[in-house]
Length: 181
Image (cartoon, rainbow, N blue to C red; front, side, top):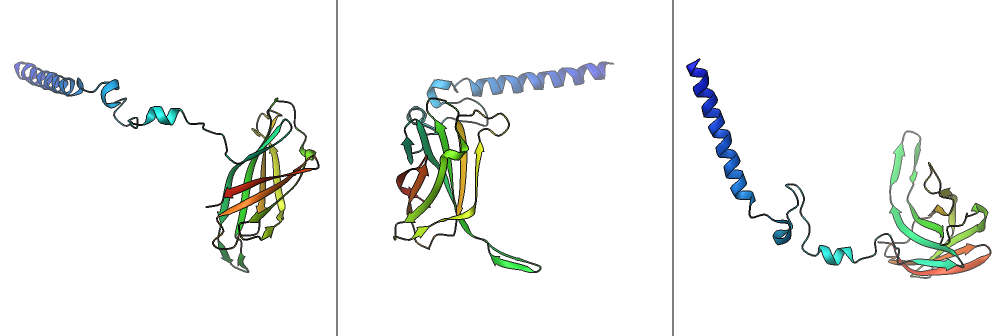
């Protein structure tokens, strides 16, 4: 019995020493001095500047009255498939756009007519016969927001920007200088 009490007392003393030591080391870490908020995460020193930026707002957009069409992202996919009896170049260029009504009124999918692009070298690219226009979010659509995904043949090497020509409700507008890299 005496042996167990000594072991327990030794373990208890070691735990107290470890707790005291870690408490002494953590007292200097305050949230205001070096942005310490946890063991695995730290706030960058320019966090106030980052909070002032507009997130989720595309610099590439155009308005059709109350409808805003923004370029969310461009994809330059290059791959060549060799599988059994199928071989070929499956590369493409794609644009994902967001169509939203700024008054949060319901959108009609038939209002979108066409999209094509011209690169910075003067080449014109028409869409492949595949495009999708889906309500956002797919599980419980808002009605006033849609995602448009359009594929094109691959761009020539060295192309840096494209101009996107969008026809919506019979009116054509251009979003110029969309970066592709």
